[in-house]
Image 1 (spheres, rainbow, N blue to C red):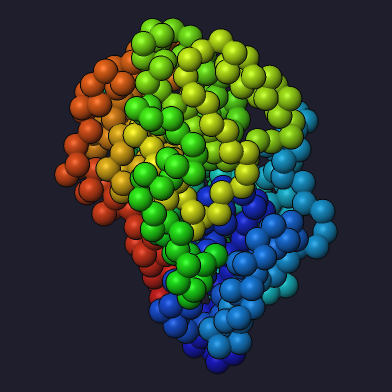
Image 2: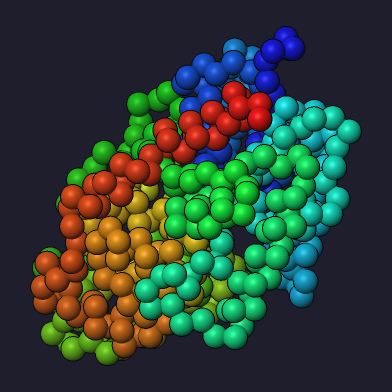
Amino acid sequence: MPDNVRRVMLFDLYSSGHHLQYLSQLAAFWVRNELRGQLDIVVPSHFVNAHPTFRAFVEQHREKAGIDLISIEEQVFVEDPRIFRLLRNDFEHGRLIKKYVAKLRPDHCVIMVFDDAQISLAKGLRFDFPVRLSGIYFRPSFHYNHFARDQPGLVDKMKRLRKRIVLAAALRNPHFSDLYCLDPYVVPYIRSRGTRTIFLPDGIETKTAETGPLDNDTSIVNRETVREQWGVEDNRIVALFFGGINERKGLFQVLESVVHISPEIQNKLCLVFTGAIREAERQRITSHFESFRQSTATQLVVQDRFIDDKDVQGIIRGAGLALVTYQRHVGSSGVLIRAAAEQIPVLGPDYGLIGEHIRRHRLGYSVDTTSAQDIAGALEQFIRDPNSTGFDEETARAFVGENTAEHFSSTIFNRALYDNK
């Protein structure tokens, strides 16, 4: 490779959710814009096996576009349920980043989950050549005290203090250059500490590297078609719970909330849960679904499956209300942007970044999602008056415009390829 051509490495040890989305967007952007250089995407073997279409896309463009998918064949321990899980995840990130950066010798390595490599950055990630490191920071929370309705307890305060200390140590790594933040409100705070911090839009697109150049975008369906596919009964309004079906997203609070709704409203509501259920939670979740069907008049539709990225927009389009009922979640959610793109209001938390986005951009209801009663109140209000959400089409459209896949990818590659500072 010529001396003036840069080599960029993307490093990610996870395989579900937004991880495929982000890597697909970056790969598609690289190929579509014919960027000059070499792009190495380093992921575990289970990522490669789980996403054969993405692998085929990279292989198709490997020679011409200078793009490669590097599979980590050894076992990777990043979802260890035992105590000290966070330390173990960090150790794995540090160990494997060090191994593959030394092996591939990129000019720039983007750590796709900066949060899980901070201790390694602070302590052991040093190289004998001038590689630059950057990372995507997902879960800052030490600025949440500036948000409305933030009432941190002692545990939250201690976590926020720990995050500030660990972040400051990680950013002192001599190779580290750029911190990308998905939370725009924390950027001025971190930047004021002397670190080059950049807002990274959490962009969406209906076509990614997973679909590649093929014209098979199944998101181009109308709401009525999606409702028919779900089997929604006439005169029912759909509240959609999208993505991984699990406890941390408020699954049980949503199910319990319907018990607090009047029978009249229950008969007008359809809850749709679409996404994969983790095996560890399957028995408990299935039991709650069965109990729900027996005790309420609300229709329940469950689709337990992995959702291909090209199908996501079409699925969200079928909803009347999107449920983003995370439990004390730190960080954002792509569902906010996708729902706003379809002009669909959300029911989400009054806590953290999601709550702040909902309030500032007028995206829907912002309630205490740890309370089934509060969720019930919002659901009943919506069924009685769909215009009560406070949803604003103009501000929602502006929110979507700020968060595009094109902007996401160009922000990263503009720094990784062209910024030598």
